Image (tube, rainbow, N blue to C red; front, side, top):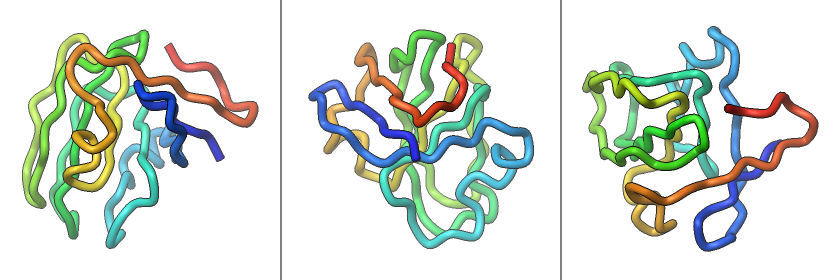
Length: 116
C-alpha cells in the first residue's frame, strides 16, 4: 500500500485509483475510508451515490494543493483546470491534517508508477 506524506511529515495509508475503473468506483459503496484515496489523473469528482461526506483536495502536477472542498453526498464538483490529481478523505480530515491551499503532499509508493 502507498503512503501519503502530509505537510507535517506525518504518514497515512493511501489507496491509489490510477485506472479508469478504479477512478469510476472511487469511494462508492463504502461507509468510510482509512487514510485517503488518490485519483490520478483527475480534475473533478462527484459524490452521487456516496454514503458519507468527503473532503476533496485538488492537486497540481507537483502535488501542491490548489483548493480543498467538503462535498456532501449527491453533489457534482466543478472541474479544476490545473488539477491533475484529486485526494479524497472523510469530511474534516484535510483540516486536521493541515492540507490546505498552497501546501504540498507527497506519495511514497511500493513500486507503483511515479505521479506527475
